[in-house]
Amino acid sequence: MGRLTARPLIFLITGFGWLLLSALLGLAILIGLIHGTPLPSWLRLVHVHAILIGGILQLTIGGLCASLSHSSHGDETPSKSHLGLFVILNASTVGLLVGFGLGDMRIVGAAGVVILGAVASLAPVAWQFSRQSPAHPANPSWLYRFSLIALLGGLAIGIAMAFRVMPEFYAHARLLHLHLILMGFVTLAMIGATQRLLPIILQTELYSPKLARLVSILLPAGFATLIGGFITSSLKLELAIGGLLVLSIGLYAYNLLRTWTSSGQPGNAASDHLLVATFFLVIMMVMGVLVGANFLPQLPVLPFGSLHLAAYTHMALIGFILQTVVGVLSYGIPEILATSRIASRKKQGPYREQLAAMMDRWRAIQLAGLSLGTMGFGVLAAMTWNFPLNSLPMQIATWVTVGLLLSSLALFTAKLAWVFGVRPQE
Image (cartoon, rainbow, N blue to C red; front, side, top):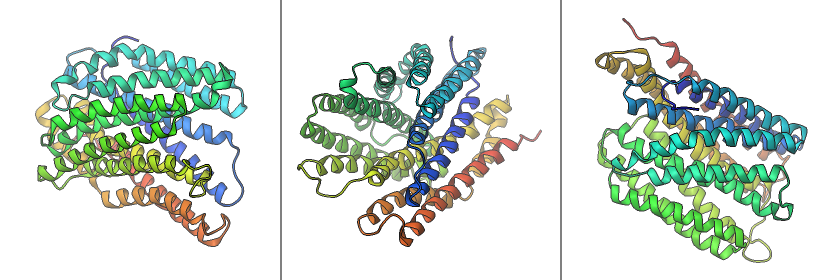
């Protein structure tokens, strides 16, 4: 594919569009479940894969393009290969979702092969870029490299599942596929990006680079051992390593919190979303350990159904991942628009500040909607222990949750459109 440089907006906006559409589908699935009219089960596969492949993977590529463009300082001629990659990635994502809809795993597997090929073509560029990171105080290069390896491994396992390779190990493969993509790729890449971006956003230094480097070692090592627990079906090993991961995430969160408090800055939309995402990450990791501990006895201590699983997973999908995406875009879009629309660096500042101020508008409402809506999943799950799904309290809680999430997403989408429509004044 050649060297990727500028033009990241096409990936970032399309990736966010995939996230938005899949979020609407997810809310429809929730409403159908609560109303007793569940949608077809294959739509859940479409929902998850649209988020991770169409959304997160494409946003990650856009972030890589933006980083390469920034590091080149505009001195290199932009490659046109990004357009071919964009078409291939989105066409194969559509093929993947169509395969799930038709129930034809051959189509799913073929689309997965194309996606894996696209990612593999980027691997040398991404690996080379990660080598530039040791100059950064937090040294997130190993996190980036590990997340790239996890992504390639997770995609390969998904393809093997689609083509029914070794079906007797399907349950283990599914567990590995999910955790390699969701934790190994998405979580570690976002942790590395947040450690790098938050000090820039707050215009300060990271509180403890040594602590950040320790976390960058503990997280990949702990996750690799967790994979060993999945392979050996050792729940006790999984719980022990889960405790180590909780400790590591706690240190990571502490470092970010101290960075914010020592900066003396009130924060903005970008920093607010990144910090709240970190809070949900801590909650997600603790919940993961508790969910595992719930199954230590032969009979679970607490009844655990599909809605409880949805509440746990959406702590990650909305509370951590979507909050991080909104935070990064709140900072990144004004930066990219300023540098792409104005050649003079001296004149970029006022325009960048204007766009950033627009992204900060009504940030409290936006943040509260996403956060409370995410917590609404937990409330719904807890209510099922005392109320039937079709009861009035469950209906009210569902529509409140949906309303909070929709209002926040609509507000952020409107601000993105607003920012893109404001051109720099001569």
